[in-house]
Length: 227
Image (tube, rainbow, N blue to C red; front, top):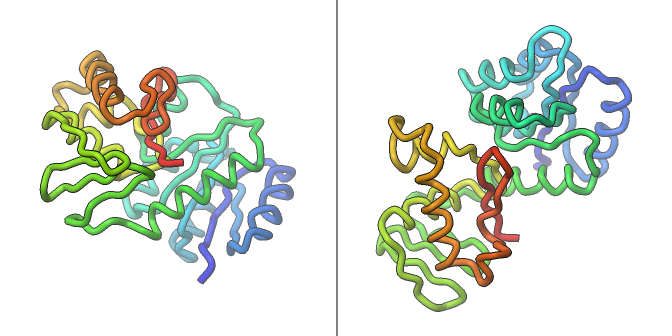
């Protein structure tokens, strides 16, 4: 069954370009030009993914993210001309899963859509090992294998790797990761996270100076990828 994608943008030329482009890849596509129309379409048609512009005429896109998250866990891919750090962080903290800045390449956008849909179509059961590229994370035995060889991690490194690997392709803000790993009292102490990411990269990355698994989103957070 084809995945259902809702594209929300108030620019007709964007919809004219994106709707047939995405539909040609085999997806079922809906469109909306306002926040209210997007929320109505979400309730009526139950899309599997929302591609959302932030600059809507009635409800700001960040608020749309919050309203969607009150009732649904549907992935949200923000597509916006707002490229400032605070705009990205606000959208991601409001519940968006990913962020693409306009102008954008269609190949990049389609790749982000595929990655997001793969994550929801193939979730790992809570007790199954997580397999990401050459990494195997065995949550029951507290073991990590890289290309067939065991990598010994500290408890916090293992917790961080597991959390990141459970959200492949998703941009996770510093605050989101800090709250998940250390709790809400550490949400404004990014130095803890930088140190832990650095030590984890040294153990799992073939080349820590040019990481392939844990990618930095400057000033925003990190993205885990197995590409």
